[in-house]
Amino acid sequence: MSSLRKTLAGLPAPVKRQIQERVYPKLLPEGETAPEWHLQSYDDSWHRHGRHWSVLVFYVEDGGAEDAAQLKQFQEHLADLTRLNVKVFGISSAEAESHKEFATEIGVTFPLLTDRGGSVARQFKACMQFPIAGPMNIRTVYLVNPERKIRLGNRGNPSVAAIVRSIEALQQATKTGM
Image 1 (cartoon, rainbow, N blue to C red):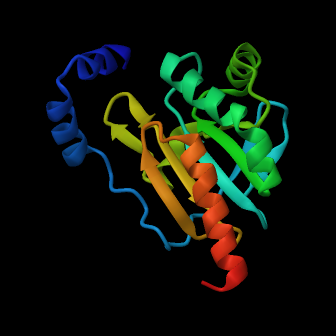
Image 2 (tube, rainbow, N blue to C red):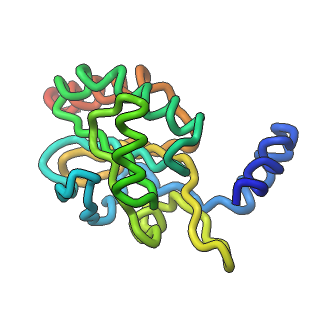
């Protein structure tokens, strides 16, 4: 799979966008009810959507430089997210031991969850299914409110500071009845 990733990385941006538009599944739309999920972290704890805001960060692989950079950005903003009652979850198909090593290596303290077989990623339209190789996550971020409604969906590596500002605005709008 890494040779495919390298080939795609070497393509000009307009060509990549054209391929992505044809191959990537459409993001879940804002306002849609998020699928139920229940996944295990490397420390054997189980997690699911609760009565809090959730940021689900679907990433490709443990050890990937882009994935590490993205997860580190969420870690840098974790205090702000926690203050806003937001829980962050990193999700990939890697096994627990790999998640534990990766989290330790990059200094991430929020849960990295194992999505064996990619069933949750498929429900969230955050993976591509390959006939021989199986599912491969697409870097995707969702913001889900306490009522399980999708409030934001982005591909790639959106600005975490912008996500924090969006959460603050959405929470303020909810309080004031907007």
